Amino acid sequence: MSSLLRLLPNALQTPTYRPSTEPALYLNVPAFGVLYIQPEQSSDPQTSEGSSSWVGNEVKGELEVYIPPSYGPRRIRAVKVGLRGTAKMGEEGKPWSEEVFFEKELEMALVEEGLVLTDGTTRFGFNFPVPHDLAPHDHHPTGIVAHDLWGTIETQEQATHRSILKGFGRRSVSRSPGRPSRSPARTSSADRKAGREAVAYPPSYEDLQLGSAPMSSSEVMWLDKSMQTHREIRLVYNPNPSGGIADLDTRYSGYAEGLGAWEWRMVSDVWCVGALLFARLSIPAPSPQTTIVSWYIYLETTVNHFSPSDRGSSTPTPRYTHIRRHLILEAARDGPGEASWRGTQACGKETGPCRLEEKGRLPDDDDTRPSTLPHVKALLRTSHALVMELSYSVWGKDVYGQNLEHDGPGLLRLLSVRRPIMLPSCSLTPSLLNLPSYDRSMSEHFQNPSDLPCPLCKTPVELRVCSSLSCPPSMPPHPRHDHPPKLVGNERGVCRVCSRSVMPDGVVGRRNCLCMVSMAELVSRAKGFEDEHGPDQRRGDLRDQLEGARKVGEQ
Image (cartoon, rainbow, N blue to C red):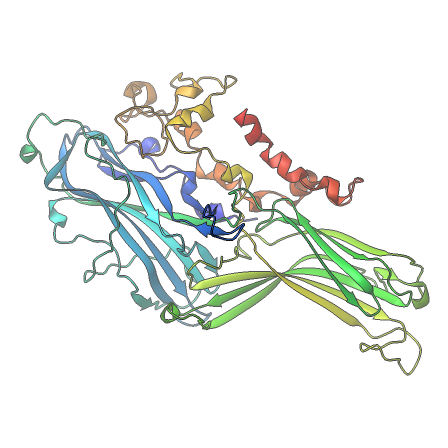
């Protein structure tokens, strides 16, 4: 079983685990590089009740510069971060087209005469604004959407080459047909300038951990070369206005000749890609001449590819469309002549109501993608529908209800019901949505008296997060970096054991994705429809268990 989060780098890329004798650059971002965007309930009394609006979000983090002590102070000219969104689309056996649909650059510091960095670590905090309708991360056999967060420091030698980004709307064609890689390769363009966007609270020079050099800036040597680093960012839209997990409890009903009235109910306590689905089909009074052969429920995924030239159109037409069905659950008999329900006038023994109950699991992140929300401007748009198919026959009747020439089993009929549905991402689970907030009160989340002090640096758990006033307030929480270097084994003063507990590595985060939870575990948590109390009483068991740890932590 795979997971969206398997594609992410570690939660906090830091040189703690790889001491360097050369200058190094790192991008540190919280939440495993995942940015969750959700609607905000409207407070305007003139708007309709229950309406919501989507607001922009920010990628928060820090750009960390490490200068080895052997180098001494060094000068740099500029510090920048940027975000770039790329879409690659195509069909099997044909060249792929590439579109840069978003590109912004933020200049955090620019000093022509040079900004002095002392040896050790300097951190530049940033809040990078993201539009409310930016296309999220996506990947299909026929396309991929990716976002790349980059950071760079420029020295004197890069004064004539200010940007490392490609141009707005620039398109290219891949020379190698076939499925693209998960991370589109960066291509340079010297004839363009990147768009810039100011942040609301850029860090001031006083906020930065720059230190004071014993000499004037003109006497400090320039860093010998510019440096650049980057990492992937995943944008995930949460359709739940409360910001919590989504559930599913929906019913559809109708009438069919030979079946009578029917009701189809579906329940899922944690509704997203890879979710466990319980389904029930109730037919209160089927005809005694009816034979119900099989019952299937599918997830139908539709992916529409749009051209960049259609962005301004009110009714864009997809360039091509791909539709795929995934079988979620079934109730069918394998043997010839077998049936799920057979009435007494159709050579059967069943009387009274017919009720079919089954459970099944939605496909994982590799086989289906989250639904694209209506307001999002995306070149790849994904929609979903749940499809129910019921095969049955009526003794002595054809598919139109007319009598057959000879009395006997009726011709097979198909009742097909299709209902559109919104499917959230598999990463929208309580263990990830309820990550602690990233502010100065972060240390409160680690105050657990039962935890033992760090075996390496002997620091209590509640003191492992940095509380230094020299670090910018906009920075995400990070391990303290004031330990004696000889004690922790690195010149940065960061304990490698504490750093893992403060910001867990990517492997731990990936296990929180629903795709990584086994079917048996999901069934045991949800307790299934086969429980003796009925679905109405059982609904919510899975959510209660998944959120239990968070509620205990808040007490």
